[in-house]
Image 1 (tube, rainbow, N blue to C red):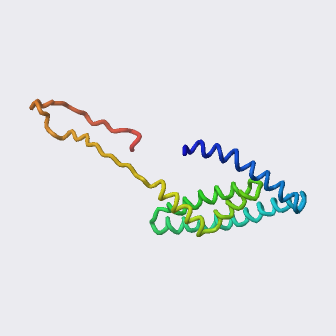
Image 2 (cartoon, rainbow, N blue to C red):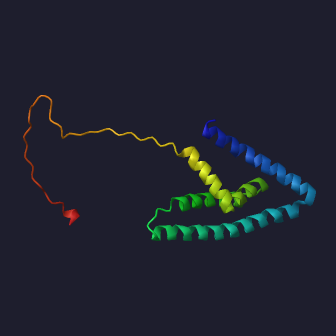
Image 3 (tube, helix red, strand yellow):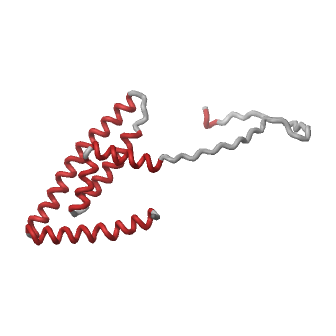
Length: 153
């Protein structure tokens, strides 16, 4: 499926599902407790997100200090950013998905799945080697003058 169509469908379907669930929960427990529940999940989510974000940032700093590239930590940071946005979005479905992104094991599993789907690397090399001799045997002679760049001093 086209990724843009999938994204468009999600932008339409997710709010409809969220509204439906909020109405159903509100009918069972009442409007005020539903609002309190939505706000509470956002507060708990942001608190957990902050702790996970600091942990990921410290892991990235340790990787850089040991001379490694913190690629996994950057991907985890991106996943945490998405989880945070989902947790701040009112609703139970987005909160559930956001909380899944906060669990380190689930987050790493999602990152591995993402990398497996997007790791098809295409690499092509074309040589523009101009050191070979011309086929017609003609030598081109030239002169050059070296000029110092004042910006490189």
